Amino acid sequence: MRASEALRPAARALASLLGVGLAVWGVAWLLAVPTWSWRLYRAPLGETLGHRLAGKLSQCRAHGQRSVLFLGASSTREGFDEALLARLRPGWGFFNAGLAAGSTDTLAVAQVMLRKSGARPGVLVVGLHPFMLRRMDQDLVARGYSDFFDLFDGAEVMGYQKEGAGAEAARRELRLNTLWPPHRHARQLGRRLRAGLELAHRRAWWGAERPEESFQVAKRDTRPMSEYRFEEVGEGFDPMIARWKRLGFLNPRMYDDPSRADALEALLSDFARQAPALALAVMPEHSYLRARGSLFHSERLWERVERARAAGARVLDYSAVVPDEEFLDLAHLGAAGRERLTRALAADLEPLPGAPQPSGGQP
Image 1 (tube, one colour):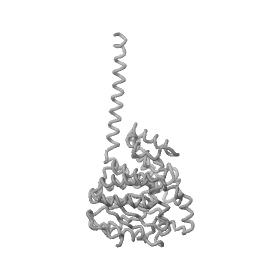
Image 2 (tube, rainbow, N blue to C red):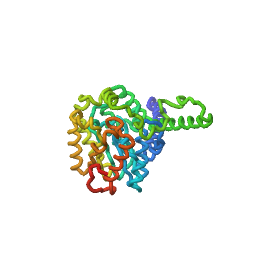
Image 3 (cartoon, helix red, strand yellow):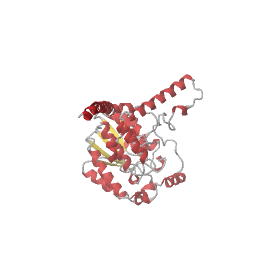
């Protein structure tokens, strides 16, 4: 009895410490998890894709049901002009959250972030292309996605990151985000602080040469990304083909896994529950790609698109809308192509939502 009595103060102290720790963790969780906390990510600091997506989702959520959100790959980001859409369809908010290196895995990450953000667009436009069915190893940390996930999301966002260079780093970040929820916001606040210091330095030295790298963790970490990253490409047809081959985009083995199409079908079903109206925009293709549809097993994409159409999604086929001379490479549009595609979409989204049958891309 005496031994047990002697242990009681230590047990009570341990229980108190545990209780205080859980209380602090709970308060931190309440501050980090709610959808309003996504406002921290609205400022376009750097070109980190995860932060850009979070910023667009936050703006979309603030705009409410009269919003049109675009998700997809870099072809989506380069293909739709938010400012032009706003002029053509006043009263609606357009938020282009197209990312880069798009695949079904990228869409899966975007789907989880859309759900967690609390954004509920009136119309959700998902840009699709057959090469999005390729195998790909996303880097959750380098691309900024890990700031928005924890171990509770791990089963969804780590399914394709079981191995590879970035897998363990991603798991480490998910553990940190779970053990100490404000970890993700501390990183974003750090980015803002560095951006503020850089701005103060630039103004104080009146344009004198400044050591930008002193305020950066990674290249262009605090730099606002350009609205259209591929505007300056213009590399010519032969170098363009060589680059795509070097990146593996024209390797048939990248597209031989039929489970990618099944994953896309499941994602489209999830997206249909995220907004009153779902539109699937089949993105423009250079004629070089259209002539090689078998390379991507494009019939797998069209089968899933047709099933989504039967379930109520609207399908906007823009694959042949843009002439070759308005492409910057095999999938990304220049200014003229972007305006052509944007006007076609604006016509097809009239009125919003519950629009009549699409015109097939004809403005």
